[in-house]
Image 1 (cartoon, helix red, strand yellow):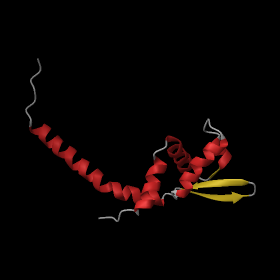
Image 2 (cartoon, one colour):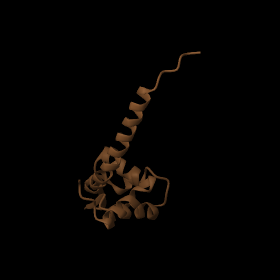
Image 3 (cartoon, helix red, strand yellow):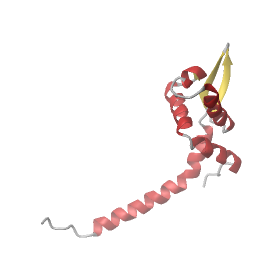
Image 4 (tube, helix red, strand yellow):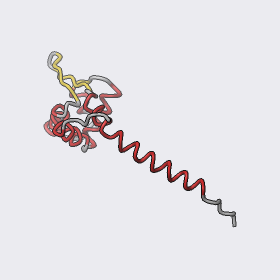
Length: 116
């Protein structure tokens, strides 16, 4: 069985993923690669300090990294913590897959209703 992420790390990652804004930032970085903060911020209707707080939460969770390029700050997706969370979720996925397969087997054994 895979090792669970350290509780503090897992808590920060799950807290970061709780926000739709932060999930969208991760999607933008996944699909578009590293991007300057202004390009990311342009996707959201919020003040810059609020958006910066979202980026801080993502950095603190280890989900993004920041690099300065001249006057710009570039953000990059760091997927490592997501892999740890996916490993933690794996047994739950298997649990539900087995339950649904059992339900499918039961439904296959039931007689079909005749059309009226």
